[in-house]
Every structure is written in structure tokens, then in C-alpha cells.
Image (cartoon, rainbow, N blue to C red; front, top):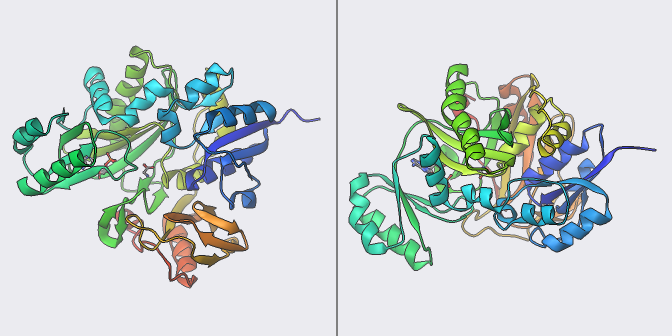
Length: 418
Ligand code: AMP
Ligand code: GLY
């Protein structure tokens, strides 16, 4: 009776919750499955499937057995490990870059070479395999200097060393922990922005802008995390600066992907800093960001299913239209995150109403009786006429919670004057 389609999302966090929820809202979509998903997902009509995200054979079998039109990959690890290549080899459609293109996130050295080759502005940098060589050259960058592990590090492989002694200690520790390659970068300064670009072989569309908050504690203090809160739109970003980012960063990147014969059908997340010398790329990620996705997708008026379907099938991409509403969200994390998050704490339930929505991530149990599973547990979100109103609703909800085994930041949106 229906020609509605079934879709599969890969991943288990808040980002995948938001992707699956948005796809489920499309009039063209019937079932949305998420592997492995999380116990919160049935609250938005998404079915979790108990298959691990690195079990590519199991995922391929599921997609075939359940008439999945295409699969949307959330996390970077499976992209770097070649999930897209395996799905293609099995004759299945999937949204995300193949293993070669995923190196843009999987290896900082690879990404920097790409930027050099295609004229994308970035920080001055050099990469080293040899401890003696890096220790000889590190002073040339001046201080502070940025020291990065080359491979995937879950946002934790970057250290900004303030002086020579701190740099030497970091470099020695990174090599001792088994890093084969370390990258040094000039320390840039300026406001940091993320752009989420849907790319289909030389064509692109830019999703609504959002800002993340990477440090664990208020006032941008404490260790780097996956991200503690976000909001969209960004009143502090002028249309002229946004256009500069498109002209100077997005366009050469998309053109470089074509020139390098990448056949990129997926999202590229460009982390950049707006320096006094113009926008410069801090990093590429080959997927959507978490927790930016949770605030970006509710502001997308374009049907996400239609957008991704067009991108996968090399059809003209629909225009992006943004809702007039503002979107704001704060992560509730387990005590001890990111170094040593506790887990197993009793959380109870999180009633939603007209005021806020909950995007679940690392939780177990049942929706009426949840336990923490470590790290970032969930995000409290609001959509409202203004950022201030959305902000006030989220914090009013959080302040009423009694969750002594959890914490959250109180200053999300401070840079937007909230
Ligand atoms: P990454 O894992 O590459 O996103 O880096 C984590 C954070 O380190 C970024 O969000 C920036 O705040 C900071 N960072 C990375 N590279 C630089 C750089 N070259 N200059 C200044 N800050 C940087
Ligand atoms: N929000 C940062 C990330 O997804 O990497």
C-alpha cells in the first residue's frame, strides 16, 4: 500500500538520535532503524537494532533483510574502517565517504596534505615520526604551540603547550603512548566555527550554523570533551564572514575533492577559526558533529530524507531552508567525564513537554527507569522564537533536576550574549 522507504542509521549517540528522529519525520519514510541505537530512541519512533557498528557483515545482512533504501553513517570510526566500501561492494546504498576520503579525518597529516594541495587555508604545520627531529624543531613554532596526535583521538588528542618544557613533556608522552606520528601547528586565535556541508560529487549545501562548547566546565575551563552544548543560529557571525568561509574554505575544499577524484557523498564538517588573516581550517571531520547535529537538524526546514537521497543518487540537491526558530541544547554528562566518567547511576526518567525535548545518548534501562552508561548521557533541547527563550527553557528544566551523579555547563551560549 505504501511506497514509503525504510532507512538504517549507524551509531548510538545523541547525534544519531537526532539524525534518526529527523529522518523519521519525513513523509517519505516508514521505518527508521538505528544500529546499535540506544534505549531512548523508541520515544521518537526509531527502532534500535542490536548490531554493533563495527559488525559490517551483520549490518549488511540486516539492510538486505529489511529492504533498507539507504544507510546513514553517524560515527567516524566505521567510515575510517571502510563501512562505505563494504556496503558498496555488497550493492547497497550508503551515505558517507569511503575509507580513502575518510582519511581527511582519520589522519591529520593526510588532511594537511590535502589542504596544501588544493589551496585551503590552515595553520602552519609540520609532522614528525621521529622524536629527536620534533624536539629539535618545536621551538621554531613559538609558544603556545599546538601538538596533535595524527590518528583518531575522539577529540582528546590535541594539546596546546604554553612553553618549551610543557611541549617536550607532551611530545614524549605521546610517543610513549604509541603514537607513530605527531603533528605540530602554529596556534591560531579567533572565534571558532563549525560548518556542516552536505557534499555530492562537487555539489554542496551548507546546513544551519551551530557552535559547540568543547571544554568540560564553565568559562571554557577543564579538559576537552566531545562537546557540552550547542546552539543555532549564531547571531555573532556576520553574513559577510560566513560568505568568506564559503569562498575561501568550502569552495576550494569541494573542488579539491573533485580534482582528487574522491567521489564524496556525505557530510564534511569543517572546523575553522576566523583569524585576523581570514578563515583557517582547524580540522576536517567526515561526518556530522555531536552535539551540533542535535541543534542543527531541528532548524532544517528542508526534508533531510530528500536531501540525502538526492546526494546519494547524484541528483540536484534541494535548497536548504532554515526555520525561523532558534535551537539550544545542553548536555547532561556523568560525573567524572571526560577522564573517568562514572556509570550505572540511577537517573529515573526525563519527562518532555511542550517546553523541552530530550535527545538520549549513553543511557541504559528503560525510558521510565534509566541508568547512566558513562560520558554524555543526554541533551536537553528547546526550540523557540529567540535563542534567549530557548536557553531559558533548557536551564529552567535542568535546574529542577535532582541528578547528583551528573553535571552540565551553565554558560552555553555565552558567546552569543546569552
Ligand atoms: P581538534 O581535535 O583538531 O578539533 O582540536 C581540538 C581543539 O583544539 C579545537 O577545537 C581548537 O579549539 C584547538 N585547536 C586545534 N588546532 C588549533 C590550532 N592550530 N590553533 C589553535 N587552536 C587549535
Ligand atoms: N562536536 C565535536 C565533534 O563532533 O567532533
